[in-house]
Length: 401
Image (cartoon, rainbow, N blue to C red; front, top):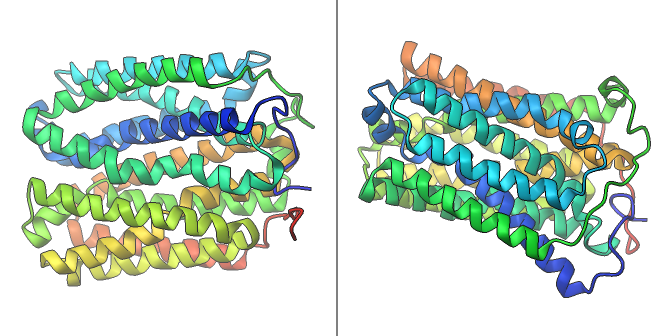
């Protein structure tokens, strides 16, 4: 048996399956780039729209709230529709949301565009990881999950920094326009590279979400993931103004620091994916502890460029593995209900992004940067404690075990 239940498109050739994995990884890369792009261009966005940095940061909260509400419903709403067609439609929706954002003249239209992005993101995340085990052999499922989830870290390395550079050179609207164009290219790629993916009947597919929450590993994993993601995004949403205020870095320097952070995130994604396949609880514990440490020392060491770089290395190595740990915890806890449990975890994950972004904006505007960073560190420490006292998710050994 596999890490997750064995279900795949056996007729496809390995090259075809891995090209499908690649396009799914591109989809997660693009939705995360679209979601997180305001982080890198928050200052010019707020200035262009005539709103505060905290208010501009609330646009991430809008995306997260919508994704949190939509993701758990995706498997039920799409029913028996072919998953390839659903994903192509989600890519087109992503293009529309970024185009609306690019032409926004005020917060209301900005929020509308970000809400559309949230719907697209929820659909991609609710399906992408759940479909992985239908595209590769069971023994490679763990690596395939890491590859698809790597889109999160690669978005930090390439998507957000490149969007930041483009925004600084050509204006923040051009960055969202570029993502809209890329989403249309993604839709075409999905139509060509993904095989037909008819709906599979899952055990308990018609049951309520309450039946999933009745599983202790599912419930306790949700608590740990919610806390650590909330802590991270309360601070990371405002990393640009934090770096500007603490270290005096601006413009291209911000892009380079975010690039360093994202590179560390890629390394952490694959390292944590390999570790979490067998020790998901311990891996998440280490990551939450690292995030807490980075946030504690940022006001102390981030006052110089080298100090800020060191903090971002620790932060990137810590947060980079959280997404893959979350997904692996979900499928290990309820392998017979992959789409349903993935949707539930995506809802919690994106809801935590919204909560963190919102609370971070309130604290930043009301109490200041130091309170924001140290308060977030405290929540990350509680997340580590919650992970420590949680029982491990159910593990299904691989053939090589």
